[in-house]
Length: 209
Image (cartoon, rainbow, N blue to C red; front, side, top):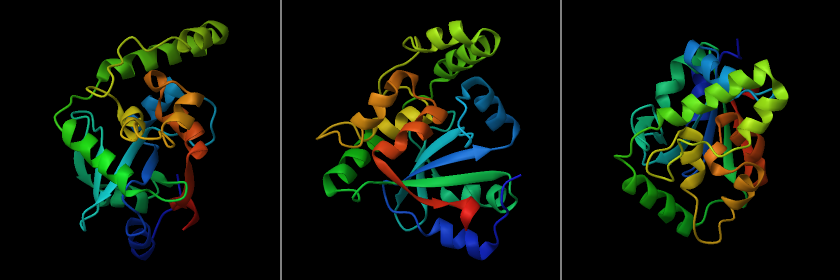
């Protein structure tokens, strides 16, 4: 179990986002545990999902949700599980703040890919590699270094890939440092969590509220 939040603490957390912030989720539920089982890289924070805050006065978030590449939801969708201690969330903000050009870029990405389909096959291969890794680590490590064969650039991605691809373009200051640590086609939530501090700062954590 994670730290349980009071309603006051949740409101402080939910209203502390800026547009363009990336939220990374750790969930002790069945789905979250299955994702981590297949992608666990040894990080103490067991990341299973990523989302982006869009704001718009209603706490809008953008996330690859199992259906759409850029599905629209609300941050309060996570309120109950966080308050019950079933979910932990960390929030990361672009170093130096986000620029108007970067905001325009991610908003354009959201619009272009709002009807994109979630890529379940990408997760299948992540899971398969994870299982092999647990059986034969040297072979699994080599296998996971190969390009995920199901990856489709932008049109059909999983949550962690979407969260990074939306920043691609311009000077790539938020994109390049992350993919230098892990190629975009192999970027799981766990790998994103390990690499994100190269371009983003940790600004909130429900465990410390």
